[in-house]
Image (cartoon, rainbow, N blue to C red):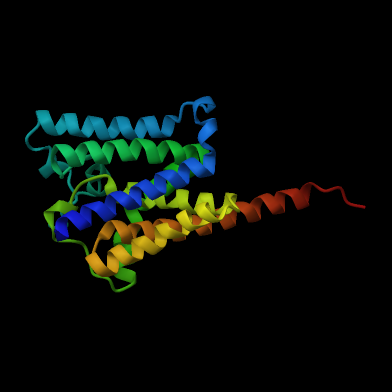
Length: 224
């Protein structure tokens, strides 16, 4: 029962983030938007990782992020390895494709890449900084794209919050970090914690972008 609740809340959080993304970019505008090439690229890498695992038995050992092994590349290559069986791989790749596409349509390609890489690199260091433990020793955590996807997905909740005045959508968006914290405290579910990290970083990114746009407008005004 506990395992079922774990997966149910993890899935619910993702559904909330994807719905937030649709709300932020506009459901009716999706078909008319350009191809999200960053999302296509990330999804292709994830699919290539699965194919590599199928045809090379040593792929996981060579490319995962086991802290007992050396190799600077592991933190990046491990994201495109999958360690949750067939169902886990399908879920991870499908959600990566959806989240990355929505993120690119809202944030743009460059910021989407930055946020995704932040989701790869930051959570482990933030855990240490906040005293939440060091690198995981659970082999299930040595690979998989879900952490970076949930981190990026949480930025969609912040995106919706900055775009809407509809009460229902505001509740949906703020529910993402709230549920994420609850998942962390009650289930020790790392997906919830990385979502909180992603939401917090998105606040900083949105504020910085808003400030830069405001500064650009001020500088473009004619002087008397």
